[in-house]
Length: 174
Image (cartoon, rainbow, N blue to C red):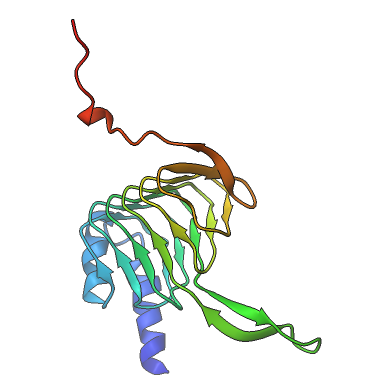
């Protein structure tokens, strides 16, 4: 119990504070047992457990909340807007005396190159495909296909996104 409390104080007070430069935060998270690679991670985040993996080259903005009662897997080069919430735990609906029944934990996976907009919430068991975009303020209740833009509450498909990287596009003929 005390070790869990100390871990929470360390992760969510010290490491998440404004006193730690964002370009060093990934090192402290990694040293604390999270699988975090070189990324920019802003202050004010919440890390609910050690079952968090963040790939290389990510940008995690201020106030991101990782429930982490089940694994949270963030691919490479993923961007999070401020105040993104990733929830991995929920409850079964139970009887009338206490509706929040047994805890159900399900992993969340966010694919390489995805962008999750400010204030978005991702619910348990959701996979966001590579290169997908989640609009600001969206509630993601179902999987999002790769290279798809979703928005709304609940999030719905807005359109498919290009898969050709403009850096890879052939030069225009003169």
